[in-house]
Image 1: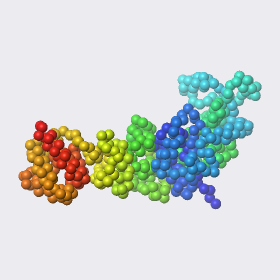
Image 2: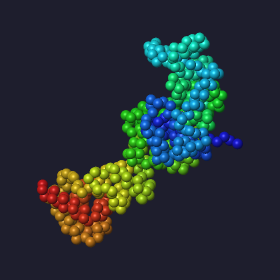
Image 3: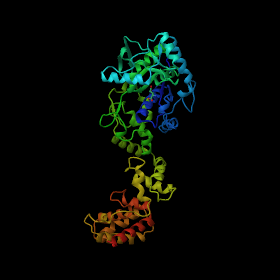
Image 4: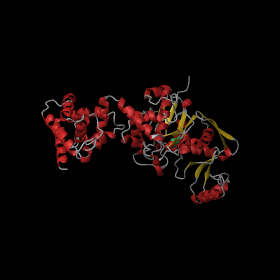
Amino acid sequence: MTQQIRTRFAPSPTGFLHVGSIRTALFAWLFARHNGGVFVLRIEDTDATRKVEGAVEAIQEDLRWLNLDWDEGPAVGGKFGPYIQSERLGNYKAAAEKLLAQGAAYKCYCSQERLENMREFQNKNKLPSGYDRCCRDLTEDERAQKEKEGITPVVRLKTALQGQTVIHDLIWGDVVFQNNLVEDLVLLKSDGYPTYHLANIVDDHDMEITHVIRAEEWMSSTPCHIMLYNAMGYAVPQFAHLPMLLGSDRSKLGKRHGSTSIRQFREQGYLPETMINFLALLGWSLDDKTEIISREDLIKHFSLERVSKTAAIFNHEKLQWMNGQYMRKLAQEELLNRVMPFLEKGLPAEINRPLDINYVRQIVPLIRERISTLKDAATYASFFFLDELEYDSEMFVGNKMTAETALKALKAAEEKLSALESFTQGSLEATLRPLAGDLGIKTGQLFNPLRVATTAREAAPPLFETMAVLGKERCLKRIKAALAKLAGN
Ligand code: GLU
């Protein structure tokens, strides 16, 4: 029987999830789903100094929003729980004691001050950085003396000083590290909390993780982890280190490149479907050309073999384009439901709430081709809701128009429209097109001032449909306001 594949996402609750973390979660999730395996969510919260209130809940909320479901972890439980490291401290302590007892780890009594001086010295003299192993070979007596002084030690891994450690990485192939360059990392801190390194390998073992899929930046810690697995007598899992994410200037993706947390993209009106598709292509591809790939197809085709070693560039324009594609694919009613909260939140405060969903239902088809995020809807469609439009009367002029001809055109339109019984796209077109001819002006010379008067924009959705949605009363009120504006000039 082949072993069941188990992957995990192990975020630290230090704030809103970075899109890079979500990319890691997604690849681990896809790998599990493709292989009929198990996807575990584990919270790595052993660094109390970096913990942020509410972050554990926020992580879960973001994953749920993306529909990245976990089979074991907070909120769903599982046979290896608890899945929050601060609730598993006993396990790490026991592991550290075991390593101490078998001589694979040692207690280090060095003060912060000594460590700082050491780092400074190394920097100044261009020596390799890392702990100088000062406490590694203390005698029993020396150790007893330190204990007597009341110094609380940390526990460090006794790394191999000779030979090599090879990572058989599923993406990078064999990566060789010289053991003498691997630092004697701290496993247990003086407050009794484990470091990431210890807690991570103890849990990956206890939770029977078969594939550790994580960001490339962890590669340099992996030799130490392999030594730890070996010292603990644990089987070493498979590793896959995902390529770096870079901004458009090819530096590490960070705040200066714009939004970086998944929450920001959500608030800007990107769809979860878009984010999944977009992030999947940061380092993986189906065939080097397909851009739009459904969740089902991602699951069907995902493989680590097609993950590239080349750093992936996060291209905001492409994301925006892709979001537009996904918005256009949504069924009308679905798009309506998603747009509603953005309009409720984003439209100017003076507009009455709650909005009339039936009115918005008519607006959505008119704007869907013209916006690329849900948030854009509020900016783009505000004229549908405002009581009074603001615009410059200069907008009437141009297109071989003077304020006078605009006034004349609008006045004639007002008259015709007041008499209209049915105010539909068809009736508007049948009334207004001939009117231009009657007035001896070009259609544009009639439609442009009408567009400005009813929408306050030069570019808006098709005029007759827009006016039909606005309705007779609103249109006439706006035309009257435009006439007053023009007459005042
Ligand atoms: N807690 C680590 C992080 O926040 C997990 C790294 C790993 O997956 O091993 O990225």
